Image 1 (cartoon, rainbow over the protein chains, first blue to last red):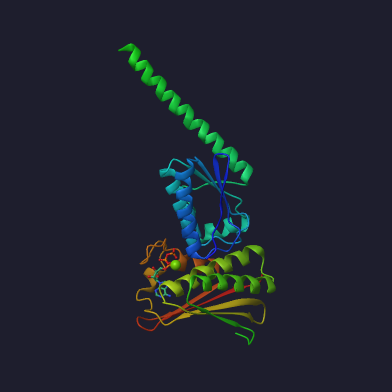
Image 2: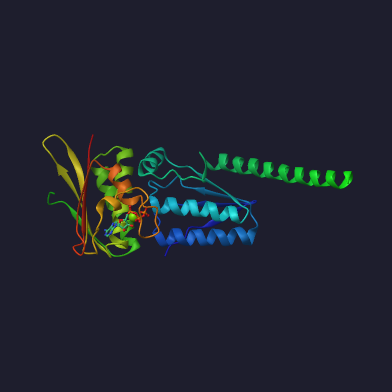
Length: 138
Length: 134
Ligand SMILES: Nc1ncnc2c1ncn2[C@@H]1O[C@H](COP(=O)(O)OP(=O)(O)OP(=O)(O)O)[C@@H](O)[C@H]1O
Ligand SMILES: [Mg+2]
């Protein structure tokens, strides 16, 4: 069985799906990614589907599951490069991919991840400040 | 369907990939628009997977058709599985007995121009879809 490679680039895991995946291959990718997120501690995953000429309900569901599992493991997933014809077909199929963040290409996906990471870090800092304030006033 | 149609047995995941590839090739030959190619291949992928998963395997036949006014592609998915008892229910968005999204049948119907099902409990299921060139 073929396997989709998962590359680590900086603190991001990059998956570029270059083959027409059998269902088993998609499920294997889901497992591989979860393991790599834990092993590397990466907080961002980019899945590049620019070479896919269709996304059916199975692949759509797999992408949604990958996004949910990553979130539980403290990583954000961005799906990038969806072709216009694929987007039109997905919507008509009835699959709107709720909960999946998308960007037009890898570069924009990396920017999106960097921005949302910066935001969560600011939020964490704010919480620390609030704790500090509570301590000093008591 | 004319004599040029091709038959693919569907017994494994890999066969579903083959169905997608054949439908894509025929759709390009028939000069369907890019969006229509994408819709037809997606519909075929859904129905071929149903043939495998629920029908217990079967066949997919892909061919070109021609009416007086236009040309198109016709695909027949056939299995000898359990059949579908309540067709209206099976065609409802979100209905699934297999833990899927329940979008395969209903979604595939939206993606093609013609969609016909012949099924009965214990008699298997045959689904015929047609996409016409614009
Ligand atoms: N060839 C078939 N033989 C028997 N039952 C079928 C067949 N195709 C579909 N069904 C029944 O119809 C239901 C709906 O099918 P549909 O493809 O819409 O959804 P699904 O396969 O369950 O999920 P999804 O395709 O979204 O992953 C199936 O759960 C199954 O019960
Ligand atoms: Mg289905």
